[in-house]
Amino acid sequence: MKLSPLFPRYEEFSPSVPVWCVTPGRPGCIHRFFDTSPISPSGRYLAVFQFPFEDRQPLPGEAGQVCVVDLETGRDWVVSTTCGWEPQMGANVNWGATDHELYFNDVDTRTWQPFAWKADPLGGTRERMEGTVYHASPDGRWLISANMTTMRKTQPGYGVVVPDETVRRNVGMAEDDGFYLTDTRTGKARLLASLADLFRQADPPVAIENPERQEIYGFHSKFNPQSNRLMLSIRWFPATDKPQWNLFKTNFKAVRYAWVTADLEGGPVHCAVGPEQWEKGGHHATWFPDGRRISMNLNIDREVLRFVQVNQDGTNLVKMLDQVPGSGHPTVHPDGRHLLTDTYTKEKTSFQDGTIPLRWVDLETGREQAIVRINTLQPHEDSVLRIDPHPAWDRTWRYVTFNAFVGGTRRVFLADLQSLLE
Image (cartoon, rainbow, N blue to C red; front, side, top):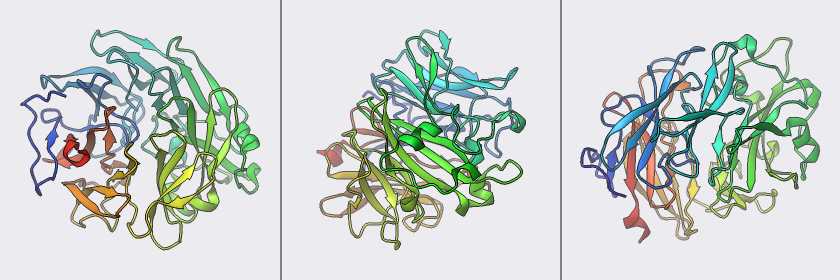
């Protein structure tokens, strides 16, 4: 990777690896999530989302910008404006198989129908997809998402904003809502698996009581690195007489969770991590590089968060380490020995002053390094506006992109971890 000299080095608190700010002239930018690299397949371009404002959540129809940065020249430009965004994930910007394929959400404000664009940020053309995007398969062939308008039922920040009255309500196991697959070659979308299908087929089963009395929704969805299997997140809470919103704020303890895994061909469905584990306390599961195991934070012993792993079929749920506490958004490197994660500002592993570490953990010895210390505390009390670093590996597993709040605005940073991997 050739980095432009226009990108300033970040040197506060003496990072142990080289770090650059790659959005120095464009305020209010974030990259997507810890399971998706914002760096293009060739390694030359960076895709980010730029907020129109940083002090409140968006209203329906308010637009932000999808931008691309040329890492070699330092030049950046706006690919598109979009109304399909929220503060945590932006417009869910994902690269496809090449630098000419960039996917992100938008909303038709005449109908309040969300959809994804397939854009060529270099050629300037774009094509409308029937479905929406949460995650693009690494081979660029498919897009997967739950219903992007219902995510605010349990937790704002991850989907799109439309008027509340246009959002469906799922009481019981919906046969006509769930997870949607879009073919990027044709733009056609279909319901891959309904919520009812997933509950009926899961083995082991998902432990849910009185499903007919629950509001049930899809949330996260993730392809494995091999693009042949999916992790699908289901959330539910007791239904009341009136529709409910933002249960994380109004009644956090009422929400239940399950991760199920499935393939694209109608094969076995498994409950990998059910509500009986989630209720212990945990967060942020993702695939191992091998595409067969899942990592996450879990209070497995009901003492403190630990880094755990589990097979995609729900077997062999174990701690990776006995003593090192979990935090943030963990990913395991393909070398099998190292884990990278960040920390929330309120977790005990933070520095308790608004700055947090990027934690580099040796899974064999338990030794840990804080390789970067940086501020992520922003000035507004609304937790939906929080800044998560979301450290994400590029496709070479050498470079890591992450978010922070520096100089009074959201910025995106790039770290070179080559020295730690040698």
